[in-house]
Length: 133
Image 1 (cartoon, one colour):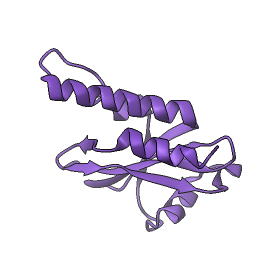
Image 2 (cartoon, one colour):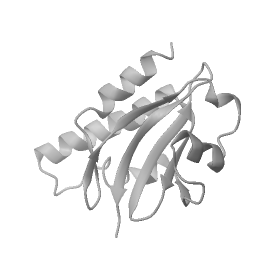
Image 3 (cartoon, helix red, strand yellow):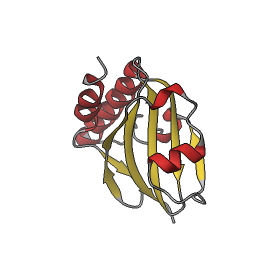
């Protein structure tokens, strides 16, 4: 059931913050019926209300979370728990969505959209922001 996917994503991303020069929470994204056609850059900019000249970079899901979802020897308990939460979030995305792509829109203040297809033809995922100067 598609309507469970946003709830699962919300639960998996709850209380997590995307680390960059600032920390931002995750928000669930659902675009009903939009998976019938290819998600072009132009269409993504329309769906996200970004101007047409916005730059878009695509990265792999595992690359986006490379610093969050991998346990390091120097992590304390809280950091280890966060790593497990990020791993769980990645697994939730992969278990519920196909053709997942990560889109980075803009520069410096970057809007990140992690979008995949649901079995019922919707586009769904999560969004956040990263700051890179």
